[in-house]
Amino acid sequence: MLTDRPIFVVGCPRSGTTMLQLMLHAHPRIALPPENRFVLPAYQRRHELGDLRDPANRRDLARWFATTPQFADLGLDEQHMIDAVIGAPPTLGSAIGTVFRLYAERFGKPRWGDKRPAYLRHLPELLRMFPDAQIVNIMRDGRDCVASLKEAPWAPADFGCLVDSWARAADASLRAARRYGPDTYHLVRYEDLVEEPEAHLRALCRFLGEDYDAAMARPQEVAALAVPDYKSWHTRTRQSVTTTRVCSWRQRLSAAEIERCEAVFGDRLALFGYRTMTGAAPTPADRVARARLAVRDRLGPMRGVARDAGAVLRHRRRGPVVPARLTSGQLAR
Image 1 (cartoon, helix red, strand yellow):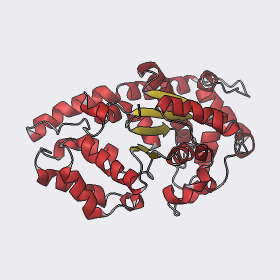
Image 2 (image 1 turned 90 degrees about the vertical axis):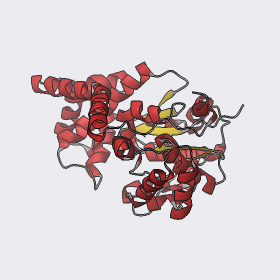
Image 3 (image 1 turned 120 degrees about the vertical axis):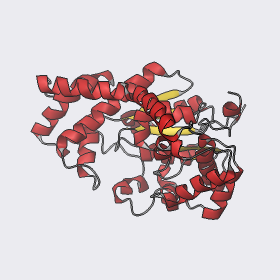
């Protein structure tokens, strides 16, 4: 039986999330849009939205969607989107999902979802909005991610921040693997995917409950549709899948940078099947910093509960109903 569950692609920035997004977008039943900037902010400000049973509040929310950065990249008619959100079930997830469903309808496809690396550290919130979602997590050698992040025009200049970015993503992936079952969460390594695209895409399709389609191994053919031209850091998505960037950290990072990466997250590299080169060990300061970040990330959901309680007191009302009511699985809950 065909499924209509939403699909979300997550991972560390520069880990191949866009390539995987395009592979899925090439499937005849799946459409994943360019990255947006409204899903997590909408969840975070949900207590300000008012009662979404009121069509005027749904209209205000939809109008706000249209003002957010990158909304234009979806290629949707603004008024049509607003009307669709007004007509959607009165929940936050339904409003957001309606935008993605409209994007899928542009291509005549029934399954929708989204891709954004940041979702990896916000899976509890994402699954609260979309209870039947399927999460696809792509993992890449942290040294290659750091090397690629270092060259990205939007990345912070502090090399330590780049190292922490992969370390935190790796920890989030490990938490997700422990927390979510094999029907909800699927991990694929970038290196395996580019080495044997068909084999690993077939495994991904089994997870999603879909038939494999050969077009998925040619993501460059849909890149012009789903990757805006101004995103110059994604130019490689217009090329065939290749292994040329595997282990490119050997040339792109200095010896000191490689040692720093391995000192901070070498143990996690090993957990995902990557070999270290230097044998560098974390300093006491590294261990303290890692523990601090780990505690902060693990306590994130609890801080969210506390913020919810505070928001209720401030606004003297609870936020809107959150779970989407758009798919058969969402409606069954």
